[in-house]
Image 1 (cartoon, rainbow, N blue to C red):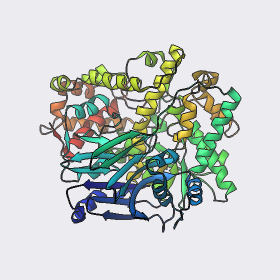
Image 2: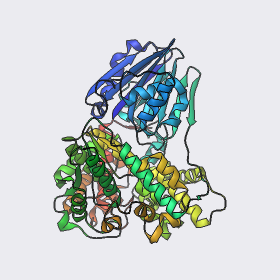
Image 3: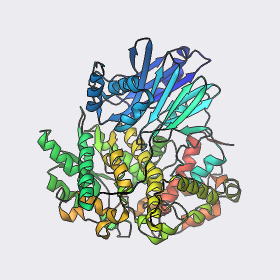
Image 4: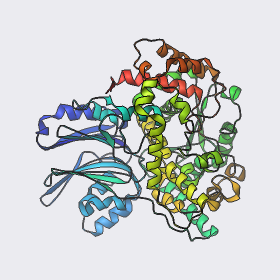
Length: 614
């Protein structure tokens, strides 16, 4: 996995601007600690940081290939999981390869098929190709947005990068947020509107889209979208197809020239990936599979069962590891290091995020990186197969808003009257929600309840899944670890999208279809374990530490946060019992301690990034 960045200016000689492109590239050093390179012609400059996973010698970037009078230069972040098939097809078309890297296959695929190459790719990717003769830049992002890509236009400059920080280091991009950016932070955060870069006039290339830049301007094109159609397969055919797709996705994603491990929580998704991977490792004589789980000091002492976290992971991790014969590592963190990593997580994301949920993942990935370069993770199964509580709770199904964030009115009370008046937070969320509903590809003839669940599925795939993919990418890449997500294979998503809810929830269980499809791969007690989300700390010391951080901010007259919040209302919340947090204000895990941390880390972000509000 890697980091990419670039700059195009049709009226400036960028070959004289190497220090700037080098600075932009350097911001991405953690994404690619193994190698770096920059390339420049008169009107284009590209930068790349490399994390070596496949073909150390043959995958160097920026990579340039010539075809006749045409010269193409590529920078690429990602992995292709159908490299062999693409290479064979391209060889049949007369192309010859100098390496076994997916980078070369991607570049040659573009040379052969142009923009339509993206339709043939199975993988996670964000890439840029500069065509020197045509003076054209091509950018593309994978179908579901596993790999990030941002861009901005400034005074004739077109700038792009894997992370916001690569744009912000450019002298023409100032860290300004306006009315809409504030609404993103305070009304939607840590979610973010698809395509929105939060900073003024900074954009995200949306998943499933490509962009072409020429002297005439920018052309954006959607190349992939979900298609709604009747599902005609019977139950046996459906479960067999899901099983085949899931096993194939996992096996494809084990290709690497570096050590590969899996995350293991003892839940359905990570256990399935671990079981399949362990079996592949045995067949290929790759040695024992290393698995990793996360825990927190004294969590066994303070854990309290609730509707969102019904039981602890530790016994289940032990059960699955023994069943699969893995070499297991439990990584444990204490409150002080978790609190210290909160600031690191903000810098990794370039925005306020999921607080300790982010910070713990960063620390976790940092430990895994000591022995591994690639890890497989179970993200996306809940969005694809309908695993979250809000898919079946009447309150969420009937809510006229995003189901993972039902407390919009309460969130608005945290804000100063002036900010509430300016950004209209409740109205802003409703507008984004209505925009998303308008995108849903409806299926004529569906019952109202089935149509509503299709809407819920779409919102989860487009919004909530991208919150988690953002988190996974930034925190893993901050630790120079590549995280792969097999359940995000677009073939799985396309097929499951049209399966009716009665099949998805077979047996009146969340992810009932997936459980049935995985029968025999896992023991039944693991297969039917009740869903439990990513583990968080339950230690009251964490709530107290974040409360004290927030209080320091509230009593600092120079804090840039103070004009944006209702100080007395926030002081009242800070004085209340953090343990009696009630319904999370975002997702399943973000309750009162995370609110303390979110506000305090927003203050840190405003200061650290020198953010101006205009």
